Image 1 (cartoon, one colour):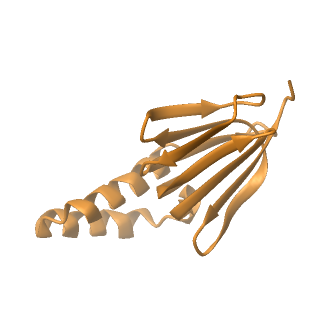
Image 2 (spheres, rainbow, N blue to C red; image 1 turned 90 degrees about the vertical axis):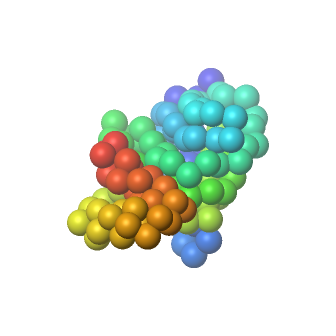
Length: 124
């Protein structure tokens, strides 16, 4: 079993993050899943939520992911997201205003999206 797996997180408009990791945790339609080197091959549908990557250097990368797919084979993990942003790219004050506006307007979809972004920032 290898000690690392290669991770590529891609959104519709860009590559969000790529590198070596020891663990990736993501939310799928079947529940939360942790993928480590040597994991059985998998293909799943991503739910909106934070994705946490433990890098080989001992750091942590967290991203807010909104839908997409997760695929793992041959120690290569692909996260293909509709929308994804790294937690350090998120402007917390802006998202808090978006959340308040969504609550005031009764926009459940926008409220969920803002909540995922804030949870990603809180998980870093």
